[in-house]
Length: 148
Image 1: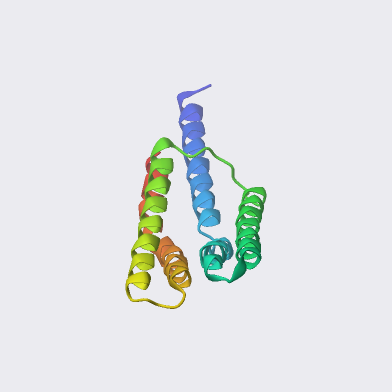
Image 2: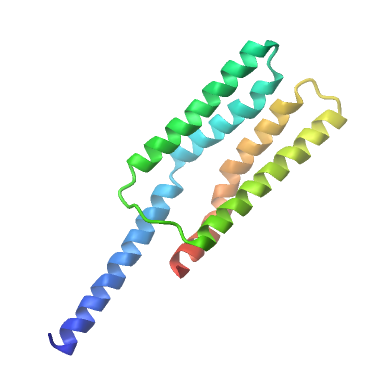
């Protein structure tokens, strides 16, 4: 192999890695999966306001099934599979902690204001945070993925 062939091969590898990262990010932030996730989380949290032990369990189980089903379909339809780096996992865990904090704040505020369905208020807040937060965190996550 000549040095020119080696350089061309290295450039091709870098170009394909960039394409892989772009496709990974596009699929990860696709709107249908974000909507299904937000709906599932809303159903699971808001189900605690339903009367009786059966209705809230059924709605919570339906929300959990929707979330798991959405995750399975999301993974199966991915055209690119790659392992997340430690920094990507740390960022995702931090986002999860922020979402739980948002839920706790809104739940506490709804109970303080003595609203009739405090879990539904918190569930709506966290579902909106998922949808709006995806647009805000995408550039940061893109930078983290491209850095790795």
